[in-house]
Image (cartoon, rainbow, N blue to C red; front, side, top):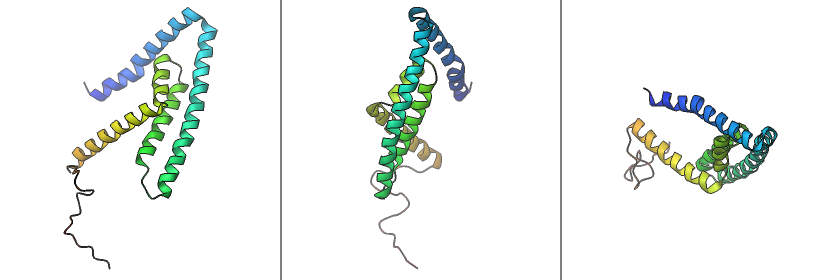
Length: 149
């Protein structure tokens, strides 16, 4: 079986079943209206936090670009904030935990660095170039001359 198929099956079949079970169990313990209120409250809090942190990351992106640096880390963090906000808008306990964790800056930064490292390793394998830590570019050597025309 294809590993991607297994992940999609888990995401679209198993996770909603577990979420529904947990919401039913929570509703039987605290009642239907408090459960619905909790779902709405986490959505509102999540949207507010995502907006606040998204604006903060947007200002960091603008600062990085104005100083001439590529805002790669900030763009990935911004994408994680968007994912966290979207996940918080979906009703569920597991998705809320995951969404709130993406809105915690230390967790988000750690996940961002892991994603960046994984992405750069996969790109290196796919392109056939080895990543060298002693040089910033594997295409240009110190002995190369630059000729302006």
